Structure formats: structure tokens, C-alpha cells
Length: 154
Image (cartoon, rainbow, N blue to C red; front, side, top):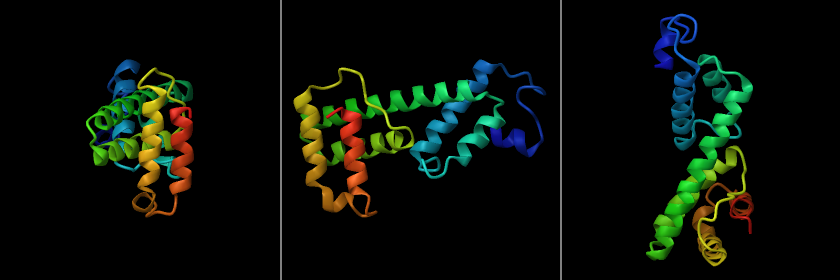
């Protein structure tokens, strides 16, 4: 919708009177997708600003939505990771941790919820470390490991 509006020179707020709530929801969907697809990273945040401006959202609103998005997605991936750990599905655990890290890398957070026990979080960390050679293809394994420790509050 945002791209079509830009293409036709339409302002969602002023020309179409799209409410802030609706623009906020569309912003959330687009940033969520952009982060998941790797288009929005901590190195390429210009797209984030472009999306924010397209939806005519102020900085405070955008930051709040971004934090909620990252928190919700990280918690969801942690829940899935722990569920996969309980099923001994190591590859699935790693996929969930990688997804969690892609969101956490944009805005590092400690996951404050009571998701999983301390022991399970340590098992996640140990499993992640055991796959270091496979996960170090980009040479950033130590950064990922440090971020994982921060996010798991270990």
C-alpha cells in the first residue's frame, strides 16, 4: 500500500485521511517483514526511516512500535526455540535462535519474560555454541553469541 501511495504521489495521512492507528499497523507489518527478510538491519536503517516518513509517524510512535515488534517477535522465537529444544529438534532450535537474533540485532533487548527456565536458556546457549563452525560463515559468531547471552540474560 505504501509503495502504491508513493508511486501515485498520495499522502496516506493528508490525502486519504488514514488514521494514525491504521498507519501504525501498516508500519508494524512492513517493518516486521523488512526485518525478517533482512532488508532492515542495524547497518541499513535508512529503509526504516523511509517507511516511517511514508506513514507520517513521529519518532516516538515509531520507536514504540519498533520496540513492541522486536520484543514480541523475539519472545515468540524464544518460545518456539524452547519448544523445539524440548522435542530435541536441534536444527529447528537454531533456526528460531537465528530469527530471534535478526530482530535483536536491530535493537538489542533482554527478554524479560519468564519464558523457559534458566537451565533451558543455558541449553539453548550450549547448543548454539556447539554449532559455531556452521554459524560462523559470516565471521560474526562471537557477536551473535554475545547478543544471544544478552537477550537470554545469561
